[in-house]
Image (cartoon, rainbow, N blue to C red; front, side, top):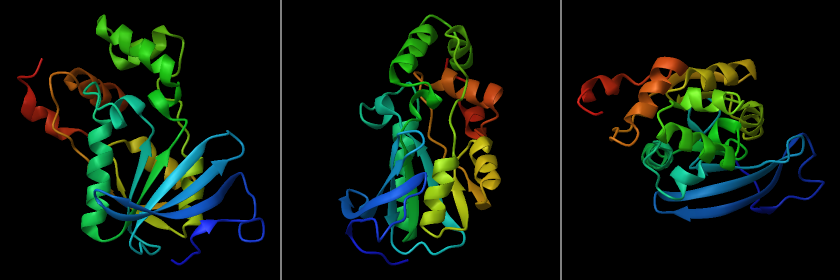
Length: 219
């Protein structure tokens, strides 16, 4: 996969609902990446695909990462999102190639930052993450992965090894025409602050989290 580095003009990139607008080198603590910037004209969201090496088209090690300000930037232990992002970037760098698609507009499984904080406040009072969203009159998971599939298609990725514990991500990519050759677990050791949240994701949202069986002692 080759492309020009820089801002893409009208001749270089034909506008679609999800349009690539820039490519730039991005050195990170995990290794050298290229950042592809996209705008979703339909939803107004901006997304970034971090590409390491030459992923090719088939069986590309891939992470679709939903934006999580509290976890990704603030190091929140309420969830495992920040650790998952770090682990995915490290895994792609260790493999020599791969893609991490960072999806904006997915905060709080699609309900937004302030609504997520309100849901967290309800969880502190005893509700689980599913009950909290419902109590606020909000969907349990409002995320859409159509833009992620179009980003991968733009990168000429046809099939992926998907780093995720969430079966909905796999199903969504398949619906949008991206083959999932393998679902690679991305298991983060739980702590007392997130064990209830993780157990709810396993028991009520069908996330594949078998490592939780080994930490029954956590409250």
